Image (tube, rainbow, N blue to C red; front, side):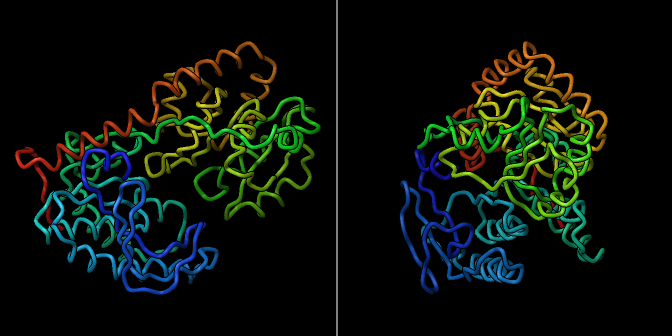
Length: 386
């Protein structure tokens, strides 16, 4: 996003010290300036603890959230528009406040919808705090000259919070060319496919966004030779391993290097994108577009009104099933495993869909939206009250 915007304007990103799988380590400083790919990066001296520690992650968030607004308000020259994100979860609210203090338009790029998602996945948060968070967040949304979301389901959620539909725009993550692998992929294919004639693959985070219990339960109902393979990590991985202990056709593997993503995706016959009921529109998985780029059929274990299920249905690149019904999941997998012709047609449809949702095209939409939001004569109805 930053690089795409930097091709047409000057972009400054307000960041903290690297802590999210950092490729480099920084010493202590109050502020630091650097340039990356034509983007000005202004860093504040937040903590950089390992994110595997809950207290460390909380410290990273809090110190960043305290220091970032101060640095934002001292930027010179004053920006023409402020763009807020959603990670850390309340940074968008601070972005809206900063834009108000600066007297400039605010564009809100929403990737995860909080506090709705925080509550929906069962993270304990006192009800009064959740209500206050939601109220202030609604103010930030209404203050936005444009709210940019990842899918139609998220757009409906935002509109349900009182934001005019004309102020909400969908810009999807989009598909990109997969990186050129550094190996021939034989070892990866062997680890994923060994012992299985047909592989249902879930590659990604095993957290709280999907009903993975139903997927594991479905595996117990599959015919011999049909395997379910989970590649990745996450908060629920070990729990799911225990649930699958007696299932001989379920396999858990660690992440492979990003450079080998093509081989990982090609090793599966059917790829799972999972969203728990109630989370549609709160989170929109970006992994769908990598699967489309690989030309692979999709099993959307997701609610019917989710963006994932919608795309799969419109593009005919897979099937959508009840995400919590193990029997329906198993039946859909078994049916596709016995119909290679249909699978091939879905794979071809996936490639066509990848071209339709190419990331460069989505980024072009975003740049246009930001430029229009920054225009002095932009006519909007924003500036809500908390």
